[in-house]
Length: 193
Ligand code: SF4
Image 1 (tube, protein in one colour):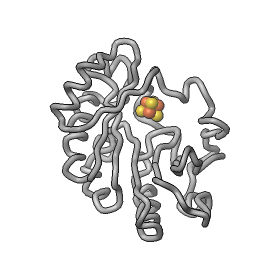
Image 2 (cartoon, protein in one colour):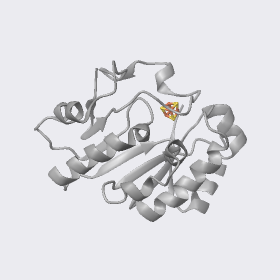
Image 3 (cartoon, protein in one colour):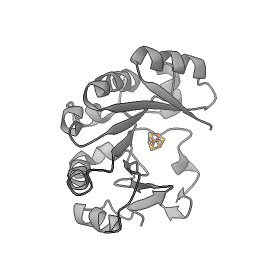
Image 4 (cartoon, protein in one colour):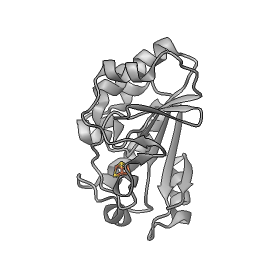
């Protein structure tokens, strides 16, 4: 199983395959991984397994908690690994790619706990309104879109670099997403479906 994998000059960390969304465009529906990497885990890795998978030859542009699932489901492990990386490789920035539902998952403000160890956060906006979000992302929690928006706003208070993203799935109004991102004061990255 692939716990960490290099794409370009960045090292991606795969802590879990679980997610609180079931997005219609999710790559997990169509592929077993990215490139040559099979990202379905036999079991969720321990701290020791994550560190061992990173190895000693560390010269990356960025560490990215991404996974084949929602990395912040594994909040405790993510914090422990991020703290280890910050301590040992302070020059390498750390990013999380997330669906923005961590405060719902853990029923607290997790951003407070990430403030000193995470440099960037990329939050999936995925839609211009709650109706489209529900339709495309099929979230487990009620009112997820509202919580994602709040998470984006709060993230700007704790994390130095906050980005949002969308996928051009049918029904998503890209212009309205740009307007929304502007109102929220964050950049928007658009990925083609
Ligand atoms: S939030 Fe990400 S991992 Fe989860 S279902 Fe959507 S695309 Fe897949």
